[in-house]
Amino acid sequence: MTQAEFLEIMTCADPEPVAMRKIAETGTPDASRAGARAHLPKRILAIDPGTTASGWCLLDRDIVVTSGVMPNAEVVAMLAVGSKGPYTLAIEMIASYGMAVGREVFETCVWIGRFVQAWHSPEAVRLVYRRDVKLHLCGSPKAKDANIRQALLDMFPRTGGGKTPQIGTKSQPGPLYGVSSHAWAALGVAVTALAQIEKKGRAA
Image 1 (cartoon, rainbow, N blue to C red):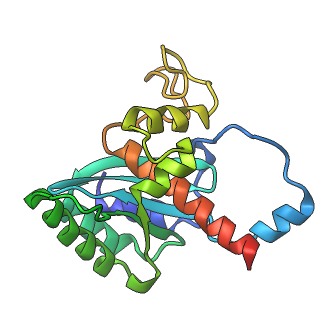
Image 2 (cartoon, rainbow, N blue to C red):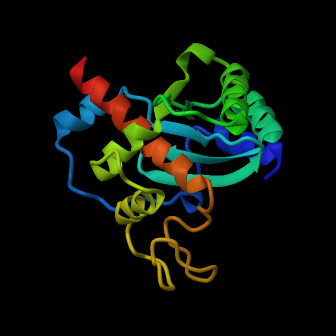
């Protein structure tokens, strides 16, 4: 994806439905609930940071607009050109649990800082911990990557082809077609961040 394509998606007030993927409806919200949610940020740009490359996902309320994995330097550049859009930036943050960690963890922390600084409003960036993602999607801090992926699959309709209809095939794409590798973790961050924002909004 080029910077121009990324910027076009990020700054679009109402992206074309053909570019979107929708989560299965879990119920029809009543008018009061819809009204309460109307003022909340609904578009999340989420990043699963890595030492050299990071996964990312654009989530528009209940629709995956696009996702991917790209080198960290390109992510910084994309954030700089795309931060004018109506998105909230959420990044998975590293937590300390008292165990020894390697060089890769500290390098990832440096990149998280660079991503935050590249955003137009660094203080507004949401840092989402992996534990929160596990608890939100699986209800257990012991959940593994496979459990998180399955929980995300279960949130989407089985409308595509192949063995995993939520993903589908090139000829019969599902709502998660194109999500792969570290973009799965980014999608988990996006879904969790949106839930946190909505919970805070309801409590206000």
